[in-house]
Amino acid sequence: VKPAEIAALLRPRTPELNAVRRRLARCHAVADLRATARQRLPRGVFDYIDGGAEDEVSLRRNQAAFAEIDLVPSYLQGVADVDLGTTILGVPSPLPLALAPTGFSRMMHPDGELAVARAAGRSGLAYAVSTMATTSIEDIAEVATGPLWFQLYVWRDRGLSKELIDRAKSAGCHALMLTVDTPVPGARERDLRNGLTIPPELTVRTLLDGARHPHWWWGLLTTESVTFANVSNRAAEPSGVMAYVARQFDPALSWDDIGWMVDAWGGPFVMKGILSIDDAERAASLGVSGIVVSNHGGRQLDHTPPPVAVLPDIVDAVGDRLEVLVDSGVRRGSDIVKALALGARAAMIGRPYLYGLGVAGEQGVAHSIDILSAELRRTMQLLGVASVDQLSRTTVQRR
Ligand SMILES: Cc1cc2nc3c(=O)[nH]c(=O)nc-3n(C[C@H](O)[C@H](O)[C@H](O)COP(=O)(O)O)c2cc1C
Image 1 (cartoon, rainbow, N blue to C red):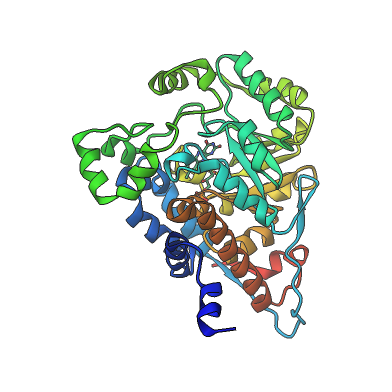
Image 2: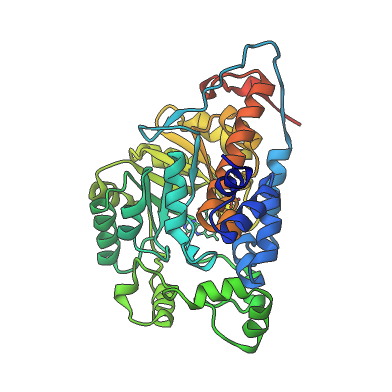
């Protein structure tokens, strides 16, 4: 075999693939994916992912709260083999991690939710598909190889909510996740200042931006238009869909509605956005399978407590009756370790995989999962813990 033949075999197939590999090889942490996404995406799109509500106090404190927790190692524990596996909602998962529901993913990359579902499936992780997805639940289910959950926003039109529940069931979703922290959308002021529209419209401003991010605009303009694919059968035009959505979120939703949803679903039912012991108790008394302690990544009510700070008390109150998951601010494998040590069954991530999606589509999402997985394994080895079920409160210490 000649050296040139070996070189040809080793050379990536296309220059494009090569560029993606090089771009990702420079991203060693989620923070690097964020910095690269910031360069590659139009400002309005990056800020839509990255921003929070109002003064972004909750957004900042979510990460700060993880930094306030110390890890206490115990050495010489024999950590050559580390088992990162667990079960989430009764299904084995290779990592104590799931991908949180996020809307509008086709704005970050033309492959959008399909890229996320493929990457999640490659790692065997669960992916919660948002009601506000820009790909239909049926199309996502077709490519998903890992567990799918469906995240529901309840609509004034209960017929539409019921229809979504039925479609999620027919598509084979394992769990229904009701988000409770969105009676009205939070005030994301970055989006208002940037004049963000969905889908992005061609204006002088966006044309100028197009010159700086041609690859992104090319992707947007050469693929199917970005719309809320799960509900677009209700309104023909994208702008019509936006108006429909704004009118349809139901602020009157109450605890009285949980019963019919649990019954209509008939499988694992999770409430996302719980932050108080009282709400957690109420969820447990209604027989739900799990809760996600979450402040929506600081995008809804500003000045809420960081979820990881309220997690231990909530676990103490209801942890024997339902599974407690947590999200908001997870950026490192060590954050997942802290969440588990404080009693969470698993952590979820939103922005970390979206930064990856914006940087390199499916490969970027997979890279974000690989980074967190490697960090999780290394942190456990450095801590002297060989399996996730051995993580306990003795592992952590609040500063
Ligand atoms: C761009 C974006 C869109 C989101 N869309 C939804 C959504 O449609 N439904 C939902 O329940 N949560 C949504 N979330 C919240 C996430 O599910 C999750 O709670 C949050 O991102 C976790 O915080 P993290 O981003 O710090 O990981 C969204 C978050 C982001 C960043």
